Image 1 (cartoon, rainbow, N blue to C red):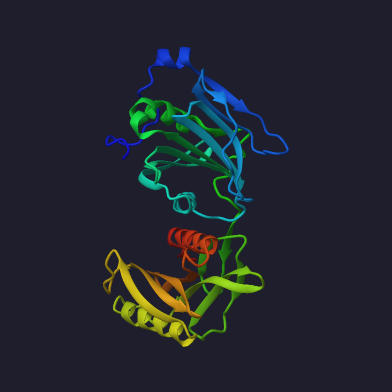
Image 2 (image 1 turned 45 degrees about the vertical axis):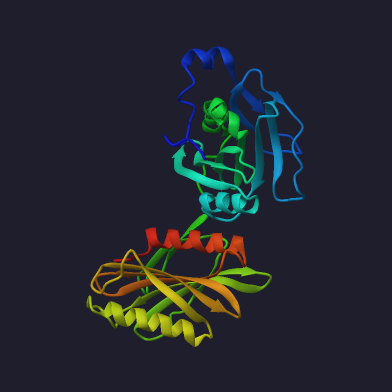
Length: 334
């Protein structure tokens, strides 16, 4: 399924055809659909009644267009007040609807984060999708065409997906505020989503500083990331000991680690080590992610424990995104 040449962005529509056959359509914000949007569509496509929502209260249909029963574009709107990766969100939505993603691309524009994908449905329809985000506002475009007419509609759907915009964008590229954590006493520094609670653990050990970042739901911790600075082990060979201590500390809490895999291949002596694995948390499957990074006077680490995406999809997305932020921002204050 899909275009073997890649995802279409409407490049096959000639400039002449764009001027004569297409037009910019604006869908203004209203109380029932608070996100205004715009996109480029063929002039002969019309507003059509939206398909059934399936009872999903988090998603609402902002607009639906079609020329016939063989093709359509549906734009869904939602608000996501927590920092996540929009790729993970799209993959989860597709899984819930039995959509298969064949190709996927991500990027950034003046309008914020964009995710573009091509795939197919379980019934064989060809799909061209786009997700655009501005602060906590998210639009998801789903373009469909019957498999027998997929080539005919590919460029039209690609142009519509490439052109979709949120009206009056704020320019914010994250779903929530990203805070800057700095502990001048230990030297730990990293960025974190504002919805995570912070707890300093300076008394963990005389030569080991740590800070916990907790994700709370219903009064309980459902995920946490611990950032540490260990001043006892400074040589390159100390990494093996750090890894063993991290695993032991996790298992002392009653969590059983099932497997750990180096990304791409963890060997002692590297300045940075990343590991991903699975674990058992109170009888449920969880995920473990570890980052070890050497600083001039210590080894720093970030260790994430979060539910598996099958157990708590949103907590999994939020934990995964926080770990991505930690990988890019964990540093030592000189």
